[in-house]
Every structure is written in C-alpha cells, then in structure tokens.
Image (tube, rainbow, N blue to C red; front, top):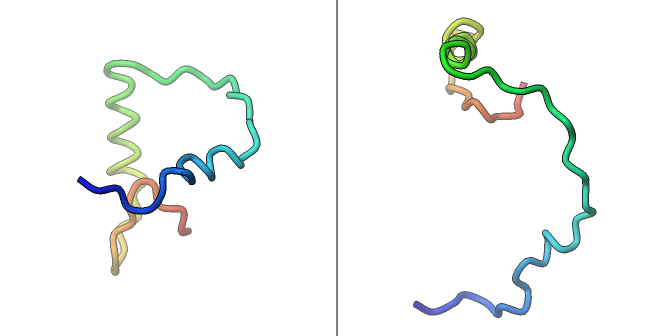
Length: 61
C-alpha cells in the first residue's frame, strides 16, 4: 500500500529522546510464584468500585 507522509521523518521522536541506560532490576518470579503474583495483582488488590474499569497499565489514580 501507499505510505502516509514522507519517510524523512521516520524515527524522529526516538532519535530526539536522550539515551537512558537500562537499570538493574530484581528478577521476576517464575512458574507458580509468577502465577500467584498475577492472581494477587488481578483479583486480590483490585479495587471493586463503580464506573469504568481501569486497565492494568493505566496511570490514573
């Protein structure tokens, strides 16, 4: 298909952003422990309220 807009601007924003080194993070649990973490994140600590459901990646309150 046809390309929308010129390809001259491809990768503009990524090229502008300053490089930040990857940080050392704690290792994530595997197997059963990971499933347990998922369960807790999705069902135990989830706030049951009225209104719109918040996705797992939402930054609002």
